[in-house]
Image 1 (tube, rainbow over the protein chains, first blue to last red):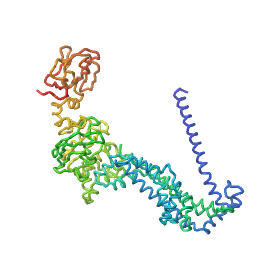
Image 2: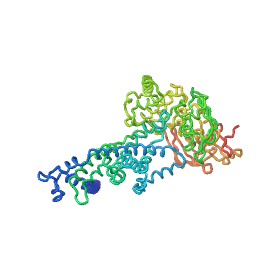
Image 3: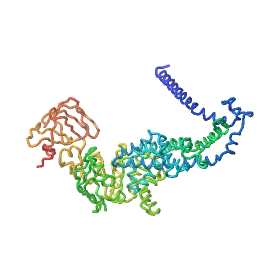
Image 4: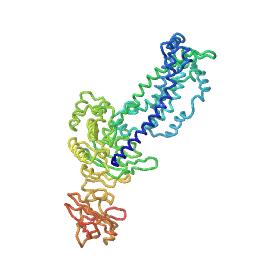
Length: 287
Length: 334
């Protein structure tokens, strides 16, 4: 073996070793992350006894049971809960993306007095959890008569999602070439059209990232639905699933079935956005 | 149709004054080039003409009409950017027609105008491609096409060739020159490359530190530079500057002589020194002579010459081509 061959061989083996290590770490993480989800889904298809006897085994002909799903469909208005959750999530998400992108555009594009300070003020929400203001929010909602409405949840979630959205999007918008926007101005596009036609398509991957980060906490939230909208007709799925958890008896079949069902819509939304995450169309805009 | 007049344009960014009173008249159909080192304010001036940047004070007139308050689209201009700035999500056709669509031109007319421009720039077969699928030179042609279709009175070019490689730059330069003849529109072109300026311009505006140093045809600037900055900026290799006292001249501070106006001899010259480097370019030979107190003098000779490094030579200046500058750097005439 010549020297160069041995060098390339050792380089190759160190490369392989690194790849193996990286994959090992990633696979471990994936297993940890997926484990609870898999356990929930598996057990939602098993009878109550089987759940407690061997929680990790797959359902077989003996232990297979759809009793959880039957309970969920019979008891409680789960279709309505799903509708509520979807409405709240989609409307909040739309508002976060729209207002977030607009605020980010203003901060990134225009030089005005207090620009930096406004940016910092808007980003402050990233560091201060909105739940600290729960009592004040509740008082406000009571005063404005919005308790037990989806509007209350939408407003709170929009406020919760905006800081991160503005922070991430304004960073991305600063990266879009000024020449491109100026070319639009010379072609007679108004500032709104520049925003909608030139800037938004270019930051689509960033919008998708923000969408995913915003969507999941909203869908999963239990706190604000419990406090602001506990009434039957405005319950979200996460809150709806709580009816099966009692102080003395918990209907595990139903809880697991409702949670499994709750994963589906958010998974679909995630798949839609993650396609955008990968797609970058800025290439070729400017050298 | 496309004359431009700038009166006392000032521009400051915060405390920094970038343009310090620019006055300029451009006639209809002229090709005027702004040239200067980076940071001299030439691109800012172009943006102010385009309306992309607000002037701090002064007036801009296009066709005798004051346009200070007009947005870019209303000024009858179009602009080609250094980075091309093509819309990445639109096809070539979409890129070229967006401005016309925005101006509510009928679709039929847009089609003929786009096709006219694309055949002029040999872009016909690329009309349905996106910018990402084009090469650098093609992208630049699309950017120029986008500017042409609007049939503006005034074209603005912001360093359009600086992202192209050397061979393509020469080609595109020729295309722009041909375009100017064909369209007979007024063109204003910004570059830091004095070769581009010399080869394309009807008139050159030399900018430095926010001031106009000199305005004139390329040969005026070459033959009678107003000061040592213009003298040094125009011409390649750069003009040699020799302290006047070395040559026994007590009326001026600095003496300038272009490398092509010097002859070498073994003895009897204005300055003498040792050869420090020789560049043979085939057509030309550049000799660098280290002349001690007179500094490094470059000499451009035509044809092939074989001088050894460390050889001792004398340089004789052409007396008719010697420029004298006073202590402010201004040219002493007469």
